[in-house]
Image 1: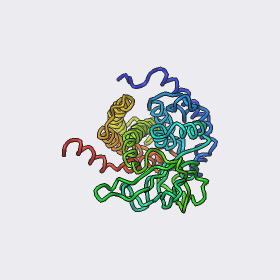
Image 2: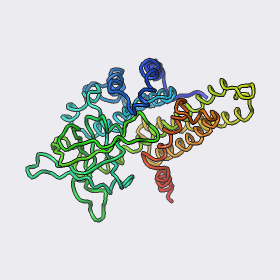
Image 3: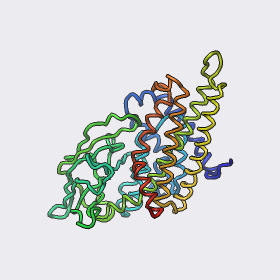
Image 4: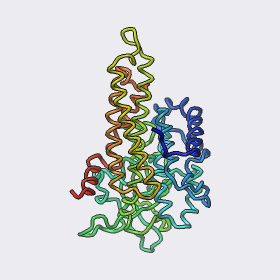
Length: 385
């Protein structure tokens, strides 16, 4: 079926990006995989390519294109090649919406040029040890100083993507106690300079997958944050977080669909080259049937992901629709990648092969951005159940 979600400009961007990946990423990716992170120079190259500023208005140094489709193409192309751009996804997909939607004119002029150029890499710190998805239960505090000039930040965060190398971190903290009838009240967003005294990076977490995306524990001990760096209004942070979740969940859904498509590509190539009992594995009926079934699932996931992408760009994607897309696409990817790894036999268990890395990377899709169980709760509530 003809795919209508992308136009000629999108496809030209795809070719530029594919050429860049082949020249600047693929030859070095094994080294980055072992190191557990990408080099800072990659972020500068991505910035020079214009990837950080696509959705940033022109007056702040960006291209001013209000569309998530270019980010979706980036997801497809990196996954197709079996690589990633490290924590840059958190920089753009997770952090930028908050800066654009909540930043004052002064803040945007102060922060966005360095964001676009890659001179300041951003991360967002929500999750805390012991609270998981219960953001209303966070205990990190930001107390306003007596003279009203700054907040004093204390607490800890974990599972922070890009936290090792970030220059700025959007930290969710309690500026007021929760109300008896509203646990969500009292949370605010602060943009914290990682060079501030009292700010520290703990362990770089040793993850099962996403090895080139650094993930860290963070700690704050009496960190002074100027009041000018409050993002949005005080005590309304929880509502801001909820507003951006549909976009975050769509990005996960799109990534999962792209992973499933890449798995089929890797498996097809492998079974055509690998010989067993004197003939290519691809000649066996079971191989053909398995890949055909996988391709059918990928086609369905692509349709769901594309439909959600169009809805997002149109400003019509609901929380329940985003949850549905995430649930469906991540479950499809789980099944497809597992079956494609099986077709690799023992080599599918070796990290030298991209299918093995893909298998590990995929597992977190059903956890972060809200677990599959949480997605089902959202969908069921929308159904009136």
